[in-house]
Image (cartoon, rainbow, N blue to C red):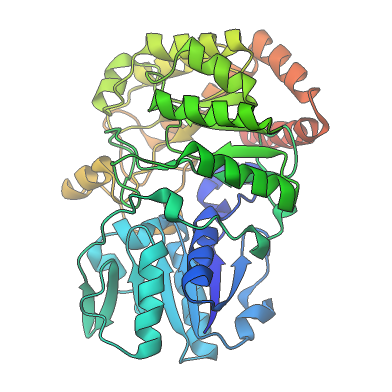
Length: 466
């Protein structure tokens, strides 16, 4: 069979900050492509709309005849995914269209039910499901018992969920040969080319703003050997010089981190890398080992600078732990990127000012603020929906840096955005932050180029009147 996999562009989902969004390796569909080619030997191609920015009618690849077209989309790109499927059906009505990704898994049932441009939905992890679905389509067999899919038969029918994949080492490495590695980058980057990797799936955290609908809460780990085999493959075959581990929290299991780092050191792999972590799951010994293995920066999900808000969103860390994590990383020679969210339902001017002042005080190398967006599948989304507080289900407007899609308890949208702009102004006009950014900008040509772009984009956002 001829199979085309499409990655929708997520740039529009970042609203006022879309100028900072660069193309990230479409890791999800690279895994899907590898699974298909391993089990079925189909002809598979990838169209990444993050790097091919053209109207649909100018994309010749869409005019070719495909047996199956699979599209992955987050919520904010669901409308675009539907438009693509509708366009394909118009040109080639017999083409099978499939939607996968977080929205297919977690969106309200009545919303998905309207999307009959798709023949099937893949729900949850897709590697095993897509192979079985293609087998079933090719053999023209019944799909009524196929786990992990939904389909239309007068109405939308959801089959039972598929169990999570326990043995992650059994998965083929992502099909990087189907994309150009040089098309991808990150706003905070040291070397090029860069690749994305997962060493685990699942997150046991209970944060109310986060959706765990695809990978679940059960943490599953790859072996250190499997991880390092992939790193060496990426270096040998694609000249990769930097890895971004996109595990939801890389350091949850200390022994796993130790094993991966020691294997990198043992093999003498020369690679720069970054990971994300929780402030309550790290220590100085681990950071030293990570640094020795090539880690140069850590992403810290702080979320709020007000302790009551942290408890409210079930981010079970303390402000002291966040502060100590930043200090510990700097002591080890690691850069820090710390992320905050403002605009939670019960945020006030006072709690947000606490967040701004805390973000300024911890002296992180990079600080990012986002406006809370209720993601389908998250506890807060379900709560706001049950209370009928969501304005609409226009997913295009579920953006991370634009106006909320619901009314806050204590702030207007105008007041919130003023605080959002103030957050960036207060943090980035701090003399110590200015000095840290100058040093970071001069650390490499890649960083210099990215920092100039980031600076211009942020100044433009701060000066714009909304």
